[in-house]
Amino acid sequence: MLNRFKSVVSNVMGGLPAIPHQTEIPEDPNSLQVKFHYNRPDFLFLTSDEVELTADHISRPILVPRCVNKLPWKAGYAEVINAGKSKSNEDQATAMHFHIMAHMTETLLNKTDNQVEMTDMANTGGEFDNSLEYTYFAIFDGHAGTGAALMASNTLHKHIQERLLEVKDLLLCSNEDKMNDILKKRNMSANVNLPTKRITKDSLVKGALETAFCDMDEQIARERTTFRIKGGCTALVALFFGAKLYVANAGDCRAVIYRGEEIIPMSTDFTPVSERKRIAYLGYLQPELLHNEFTHLEFQKRVHRRDIGKKILCRDALMDGWFYKTVEEQDLKYPLIYGEGKRTRVLATIGVTRGFGDHDLKVHSSDIHIKPFLSPVPEVQVYDMTSCEHTEDDILVMGSDGLWDVMTNQDTGRIVREDLRKFSQNEDSRYTSAAQELVSKARGHLHPKGRGWRMENDRPSSGDDITAFIIPLSQLNSPSCSINTQNGHIPEKLENG
Image (cartoon, rainbow, N blue to C red):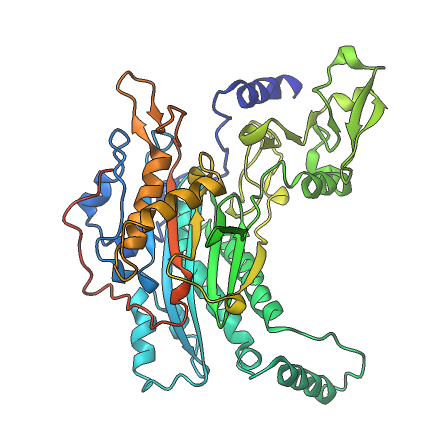
């Protein structure tokens, strides 16, 4: 087993690609249906021929919506495919505005067309006094295939709808005192006389997002034997609900608010490095998951047989600091988490720790399942939209890791602010232009002497799929833009940066 992992870790640390994901699939995978055929986001309105052109790894065309009112609040969006890492763009994105009537049934949740939600609500006569209204943006960064990202982009918002509807009567209360009075009366009617916790509306929305993410992962687990759902994906959701912005993140995509010169991070990048304690502690509690081949201990350096009997700095699962440990035979197992920076891997296989899918993923040439160490549960951060009066230049930037691999929060803010200054505040395309400029800077240009894709400062640019939303915060109380897929504008050509 040790020899098996030598090449894996060597690849991870030596700059070569990691061992591909190994999955258990039916004997005839072609017998499985494809639930969602590969496509680019609906709001781009691309023809099948144009979708093929987007996969050109040589020119890497930057895609933007040509009809900006197809996105809520005329938000900006841009994307570009990778530089040959995978055949298709494995990123996906979704943006919708919802009015959910208090009396709506599950019929609405079964609709798939973006405009259906808007149309059904228009037929209610426009009485929205008892409705849940929210706006939804999401980015899904796929890996080892497009299946999980496509599944999530077409389905996650329905799980969120269902979970919000479960607590709609509480969310529709005028204040939290009345909401807790209702809960108290329900407990009394159920003959529950024990003390109860006070509940906030924020905690209900957070709970809806957290359980919806788990529901999404469970659906993929159930349907992977019926439908062809390849790989996994990370997920980043921005939910504008009431006077609050809720950002739910499971993975290494990132959301940042830019308010004037102020930078407000709205998510945490979850990586094997940042999640070392959670993953190592699970390995400590359930050593059977490691099959006696890995160790939850972390040494300052990779230990070898010649180190037996020597004292080397080490730390245990929940430790931040280091202590000296005398190396023993059992310490020669491969570390549960090993590598440096972006090349750090869980069980020498995967570089992400949260998201959807990967249910059949195993360590190379073994029966060690990796899914127990991966979590679909998101971190949810809340931003009060009434905390200040936002200007037209106050924005939320959401991006996949292809953007943030080469851009700092400061770089991103500078690039977006400079581009926004080129437009008057009432120009519809200003946020789309800023998104295109941001993605263009991260993608860079193909070096004429064969040195690959480079940024303006001659640093290597992002070779990954890149996706970015730029969402104006000042538009929260403005009428939402209609998302009409039936009469959508088809771009005449792709934008080639």
